[in-house]
Amino acid sequence: MARERGERGGRKGRDEDREQSEIVDKLVAINRVAKVVKGGKNFGFAALVVVGDQKGRVGFGHGKAREVPEAIRKATEEAKKTMIRVPLREGRTLHHDGAGRWGAGKVYMRSAPAGTGVIAGGPMRAVFDVLGIRDVVAKSTGSSNPYNMVRATVDALKHQVSPRQIASKRGLKVQDIIARRTDGSGNAEAVQ
Image (tube, rainbow, N blue to C red):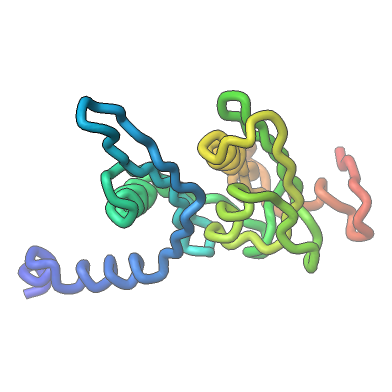
């Protein structure tokens, strides 16, 4: 009986619907392009969208179409397919500082104490909002092209690792890794 339900999509379909409803999307940029033809100009639209579940998953997509809503729909579908998971400290900030690069766009991100807020500009802020980060300080240099900035931000987020991942890789306990981060008073400590 359960096998038949799974084959028909009973329970699995509901879980996917619930997961899809929790996803938040933000339109980062929309661009109108024109193709000059014999009879005049054909206009099209390109959309850049970021999506996330505000619990540590984020993705971005790019869609092109003749109409704006269709371009946004295509971009959103692509973004949902390319989602990545990012480990967050206490569900509000990054575990460590990071830098990312895409083309001429460079971004720098720093974890921040509670209450700092999201200090970032434009496309980076959209990525952090859908990711669920509430405290971060970020700076972008080089290209201000939204496509490059979003890709550079996602590149930096891909390199984020949690203490649990480092501990499993090194064969240590999580407490050993966290003890090296701070000594309790907030000062960095190098424990040997």
